[in-house]
Image (tube, rainbow, N blue to C red; front, side, top):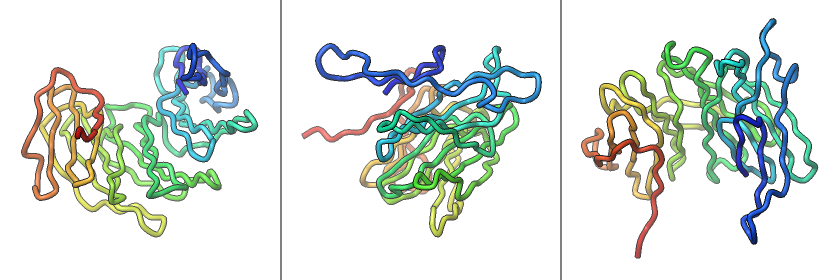
Length: 239
């Protein structure tokens, strides 16, 4: 499934044969996006996740100048019926998702707000995918747009455009609790987080041209890998 920013749609592509387009889902538009009075907004997809044969698409409500002006939305596409519904978020500009089999009915969403990155605020919301309801939320006093869930169930959120910090959350009894904050560097733009099975944390930073590393036995990010402008990290084991 591929999101299309300019076409405001999601395309399903078969990976067999000639990799042809199977179907296209048009994203909601117009009054369905509940734009502010006097504004015309468009649904720009930011991230995508499949849970129980439903496609969850993070939609930023943007005007013709590509500025987020309306409330954030989740488009939920039922792949069996082709029906699309909308879930209203309580903040704006949903930037990324995190999903894990450790929380099989939950989707974690980071929203950066309408004036990102100037206001130094973001919001973490947790969605129940069985009821499509927001069950809890947490404001973050930083410009955060990167999120990952570790193998033990801890939620990690990275912030940038100021100090590069890593926020650590636990989720229990439908509540988020902040358990730790690590300062990584003085300035940067974190673009991805990965955690391996041993608990080592990797944070890519495209502004500082590094991938920062913190092993579980260490109290701080003391190592880094030099890279030109790292964006995404994929971990694997080579025999």
